[in-house]
Length: 148
View 1 (cartoon, rainbow, N blue to C red):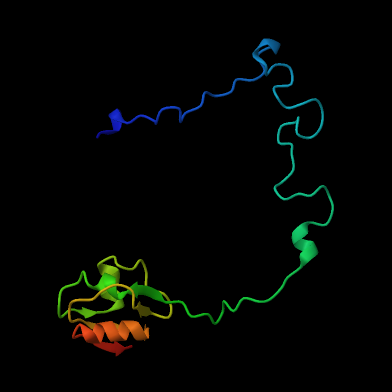
View 2 (view 1 turned 120 degrees about the vertical axis):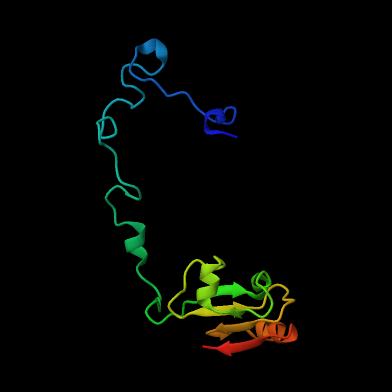
């Protein structure tokens, strides 16, 4: 496949609507914009969620609850099944996983290992947090865990 051989899927492209070319075209005179009013003019219309001047819905219902974003724990998450792609005897750290592109970035609270998937190799896993199933699966495969 090359760039010069690419073409859009059948019926996926629409012909550009040509307006203002006489009444016979079906879009003459007012060009499909109606008679008068703000929508007729260029730049006219109202912003999204504008409710005609009444108090907007979001202001009427008000705030409720709170977000604990300041103190929230954020981890880079990896399942034990993804660690099975590494070689036996490897020391698994967040930096190694980022280098191997298993995780995109190292979050502020570090690495958390979850227990989904199968692990068949003995690995030494260094992370900030482990689930109970992840601990069982790593130890069952002959590996060790180290909390950072």
